[in-house]
Amino acid sequence: MKLLFSITILFISLVFVVLAVEQHPTAVKDINVEELKVKPLQPAHDDHEARVKRFLNNKGGDHFSKRVAIIGGGIGGSSCAYYLHNQLGSRLEITVFEREMVGGRARIVDIDGSPAELGGSIIHPLNENINQLVKDLKLEVYYPEKNGTIFSIWNGEKMIFQQSTLHHLVDKFKMIYNYLLDPIRFKNSRDVVVNNFLKSYKYEEPFNTVQEFFDRIDLPDITKVTAEQFFVTNASISKPFIEEILSAAIRVNYNQDYDKIAAFAAMIALVGAEDDLYAIKGGNYLLAKKMLEKSQSATIKQSVKTIKKEKESYKITAVNQEGTEKDYEFDIVILATPLELANIKLQDIDNANNIVHKEYKTVNTYLIAATSLNPTYFGLPPNEKIPEHVLTSHNKSIPFFVASRNPRGIIKDGRTLFKMFSENKLDEELFSKLFNNHTTLKLHAWKAYPVLTPTSKFPPIKIDNNLYYINAFEHAVSTMETETIASKNL
Ligand SMILES: Cc1cc2nc3c(=O)[nH]c(=O)nc-3n(C[C@H](O)[C@H](O)[C@H](O)COP(=O)(O)OP(=O)(O)OC[C@H]3O[C@@H](n4cnc5c(N)ncnc54)[C@H](O)[C@@H]3O)c2cc1C
Image (cartoon, rainbow, N blue to C red; front, top):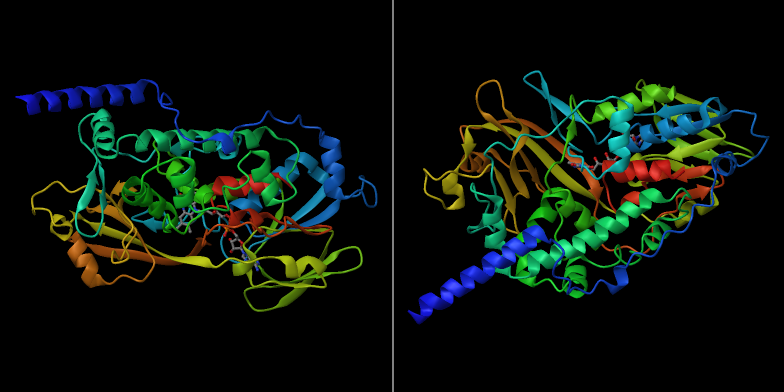
């Protein structure tokens, strides 16, 4: 009787905590957020003309148009062309070199006559630049269907979390029952980081270094510590919650583990696992395509081999698909691709040796048609309703990071389209155990994003007087939105 009474009291207390979290998400404020406090914004003391002058370097007078080369037609390069054209119009003649496909890592593949994303696939509703671009360019968006789909977390032995098909409060209740204050502590630290990050949109003055971006938003150390250090030290979150829950969401988006990945990238990955994410109808690459069209730039399908500094300009040597080399001369050059992957030689550029490099992570993306995931692979009875999004927790023996129903959902033959990410190549034997009635439709092996370990030294944004590097920012995080932030910054 006494035991029953205690259980009832415990239950009622938990219900109150759950409801309190639901209604007052920041009610419990016991985390150490001292170092993360937001300082008042510095007024922007930059006006449009000053910015134009700085970019044009004021040489030869503003009335001459400058020849600008952008290397890379991904979201970074195309948004750069778009923003520059909007600001400076005919004062610039923009040429974009793209060696492969406009969109870059925002790329689709055709499945049954409809597109499926292979790379950058989801956009967060707080992504102010992309939200605005989508509006300005009149692109249509869609919200991946979630009808009845549930996610779970597999630790290699059992499902350690399974989303409820009932009310979402049930999940909150389960979380708090299992992890007490950790979910609230996480939410508080997430809110601080997100709110600080959102302040960055208010600055008009460009940041000169990647570190300056983080100093300004009062998160100077967030790229310098691991997610584990950040969550344990700053937010007092317990190891089991990090290992079992947070780690799964970090792995989905960056395929990297919480004890290695830097806190900022981890937080972006976690925010990228939230609700209301959207994508562009027809493929996210359309954003790049539309921006290039609007920028009135010339896009040429050539691979840049060298950038050589001349007296007042830069000589670019590029090669076309037939292997023919051609030289070009430009006043301003913008690198909009990771130098680690670009195979470009920088000649006679003093600062070139100061560019730090990061290893890029290999990620295999699989698209698989199947009737369902196979419950027995996960140790569940054959008739159990199996979730359609299986995330994985920190365990080296699990051969994949995620196996998840693709937003495309059901394809023409009635089967479901699944997407998987893995570090190593997977084989058909594994797929036959993992899926019921499967066909492997597509494998794309990416050098996907940097290995996002803690970093305190970033590549320069301004490599030389008129040579800029957008993807310097990618050493902190790799998303479509942050590429637009880096390109708008020039
Ligand atoms: C599997 C995967 C999933 C992802 N998921 C998401 C997501 O859901 N949401 C999100 O926001 N982000 C996601 N990302 C990250 C996002 O896609 C990238 O951060 C972003 O698209 C990078 O854009 P970019 O323009 O900087 O680089 P890229 O897209 O890589 O563009 C660079 C371009 O430069 C070209 N190029 C390179 N070298 C040369 C040369 N020498 N000469 C001429 N052209 C050259 C390349 O062909 C390429 O098109 C994902 C990435 C991957 C790989």
